[in-house]
Amino acid sequence: MSHDTEFDAAYDAALRRWPVAVSSVDVPTRSGSTRVHISGPESGVPLVLLPGGGTTSMVWFANVGELVRAHRVYAVDVMGDIGRSVHDGAPLRGIADLTAWMDDLLDSLELDGAHLCGHSYGAWIALNYALHAPARLGRIVLLDPTNCFAGMSVRYLLRALPALVKPSVARHRGFLRWETGRAPEDPGWQSFLDSTIGARRSKILVMRRPGAEALRSCTVPTLVLLAERSRAHNPRRTAAAVQRLMPQADVAVLANASHHTIPTEDAALLNRHLTEYLA
Image (spheres, rainbow, N blue to C red):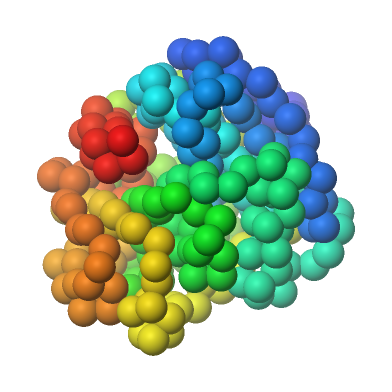
């Protein structure tokens, strides 16, 4: 079985595990078609979910069941990353191209005042979008955001390098075991992660931190949820940076969570924070 065939099969299997009814649509944007999975009542407050790099919209399987109680959930495959979005349009050269893609996505879905939640790379996109188009959003939630308020750990980047340069299941599993301290508890999720090795992506952008002035002037209500045991960055230093650069933001720590156990294995705690903040 080819890498792409294996990944497609695992993606379909992951989606079948969602505990709620889901409709999947391909949304036209200037960068190409964007795959979005929609769940929840049409009357629900719209909530757009942006995954971390390399995990796709499938990462929200343990959250969507709780979130649809109050929200119409839009789980997105990020343009340029692996997944079912097709990058066959405008190039992605920098964050301005990703915010333009987000403009098109919200226009096509006819969403205004939506809440936006992102993890890691998705959190970086969400924060930059809030700075770009604050009037379009309700609230944002940033899950262990990387390169938003503080730099990433050099040790983390060095550990990630072998799995990026010469990807293999063993290297990827070893890196995640180092960061989380254990193997994934859910064998179905482990199988999906294994399938992503070698899956095609067109462009992951270098994450440049927003300027201090832009962060201080952010008008979108923001919750930053940090993983207590994250090795992607120093959680305490990041929390201090949030309080310095965006004093209007709320900051909370997910006890015992690591960067790569959000949002799958820390779902109960995460769901509680999300539903309370977005209520």
